[in-house]
Image (tube, protein in one colour):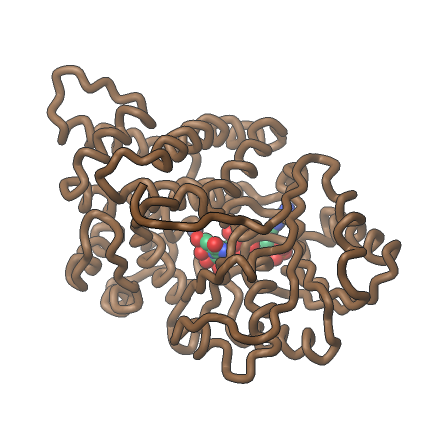
Length: 388
Ligand code: NZQ
Ligand code: ZN
């Protein structure tokens, strides 16, 4: 395990097909004013909205609604939410939705009492919070981001063509999250598989770093195997509770800081994918799948022993009579076949990227230095061209 670190995760989870009732245990801990944040209306169609509202009212809460959080929430929407939160002195923000709704709730929670422009402070200057933070609770309806148990809050600024995630500290993590796998049954298949790949990529972003013998890597291999197994079942039968509940649990553990401990971690697929998102507003998981194979094939020689281990331990490649390069390549081929099998988008042109956007997307991709290769601008351009 590398370095010195601390570990704590303050988010209390309630998991299972009857977990919404635990909202009754959490609500009395907060004041009367609750800001109810949700997306474009899926929770009204599937009945979750009515169930949540009933519990809020039974607990005597005054509800201030902030609907219409779009996938990839924008900075303009953030300013709107801050106004609602501050004007109504809200005591608790309740996010009911997917990663976009949860991320946005966290962004509002740190921005409502921020005296400067939160975009400049938290996203361009990456400063920490030094003002009042409104507590957040989540009822999760879409699985993938891990936002239910982390400090991530990704905001998109279309005018500046930037999509940036600020990973806040554990003072910003949701205080509680309710994870009911049944709520994810109504997700369109496109969103379900995008979420599955988001989970996959959160794990590989953390796995493909370091050369030491690290417990986090063993944990991740287990999570990956369970994810691949359950994803195949869920794609055939989206109402398979066992598979969907496993996927929900894997998503949370893939990005709640545990498996990053003692590692440097990579995150370049996310940096390139987020920049693709800033230009196209495409679904997050698909921006990752569309650039992944070009990226991993490019960095494979720089982290060969880990790619070999990945092929054998995760994809069951038989190493007999093969070179390390052949083993690693076979692992990536198996990964690619699985991606196609579950129905992921495999190139960025399908997401609306055209040749003339490549330079700008590469420029908007922040370069991280924790993986096997610190990328130059031209290398990002090539990866994007190979992803077209
Ligand atoms: O808006 P509604 O009508 O609710 O529809 C949503 C939305 O259109 C729909 N949906 C959600 N639950 C549903 C449902 N439809 C039917 N039934 C349900 N039960 O799904 C669509 C996508 O939802 P969204 O919340 O946008 O998806 P996701 O959870 O993938 O979140 C994406 C956002 O999270 C950020 C992404 O960049 C993106 O902005 N991320 C956050 C991270 C974090 N906090 O750590 C890390 C990730 O890497 C990611 O960057
Ligand atoms: Zn992600």
